[in-house]
Image 1 (cartoon, rainbow, N blue to C red):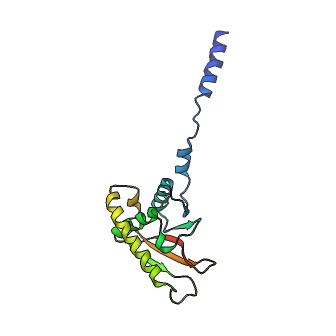
Image 2: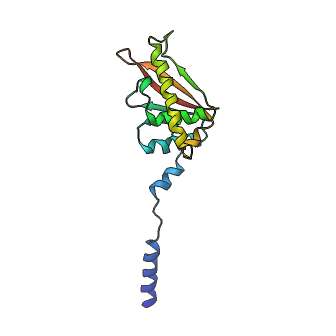
Length: 160
């Protein structure tokens, strides 16, 4: 009788030792997305780092609210500045079927705002998260919204 009770108790205890998968471990086994939506949160940095380290040739960033070229989010400026610091290039694509930009000063101000990110990158050079951008180039695709205002449509990081 005691042996039977001890065996049942042992089986119950061993059954309770079943490993429950951790949510963070489950994320590591799923492939990183190659298209991200930009949200100005620290979690975006981790998602972008994971996507860049995945080994895909191209990572595309879409926006929920497309920013103006001269209002590029600081978080994204840091990534682009780090990429340029590592020898990467930035290519700006104008909207389709548009021969020349209607406002070339908007493009110039965007480049200026990207250069201002270089100051911040010097402080963040110790950050290992940003080092995953070192072997990439960027393509900033511009588009016009319904009011004809020039906006950033997508940013695509392409492996060199």
